Length: 224
Ligand SMILES: C[S@@+](CC[C@H](N)C(=O)[O-])C[C@H]1O[C@@H](n2cnc3c(N)ncnc32)[C@H](O)[C@@H]1O
Image (cartoon, rainbow, N blue to C red):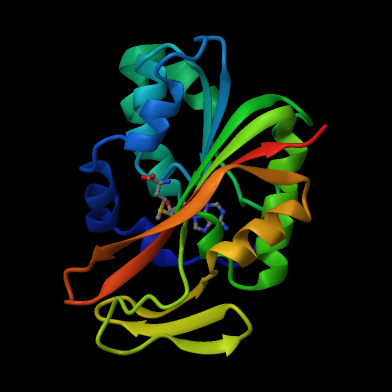
């Protein structure tokens, strides 16, 4: 596992992610789905989506690189699944190394705000290759990804490599992201056998610091 950003271990960051409601697109996508659907919540953070999936009775697994996020998500799952099952299903992982999950074992991977955390485009591709490996043929991938053109903080994001940006973030030091446009996200996903099921679109979300994130929203299906 590569050295990992301690930002995600901070109690206030865990609390911020814990307080968010489950993702609307995920809830809409799964409202009529069979409860036997096996779902991986990749980069689950504090488990807002994992808990909804467990409560609804889906066959849910989750993973994240942050020990604090994994601990919090397990605690949220325990009342629904029991402590032992919560520990078995919520795991510490690196998104580009999912050896704990079998090949072609998931019907859906929920990947919201995760691939953009890659520190290089190589890591991004390794992560998506691992997602494609664990998805069943015709399985789906729900994605939210930060978009190029985002201006979240007073210190502008600086491009350090094609598609890789850095900024000095107030209170959090230097942070790095992979930022993509819609066409590149679709083209790179296609390299891993993942084709759009709905047109990829973008929205803009304001930040507390007076800036904004562009968010890309996409849904892919794995070709056979
Ligand atoms: C923006 S949050 C994800 C939000 C979450 N999916 C949700 O919808 O609430 C990013 C998460 O990615 C995790 N993360 C960062 N780098 C990672 C990596 N290389 N592998 C796995 N998880 C990583 C962080 O610990 C953090 O919990």
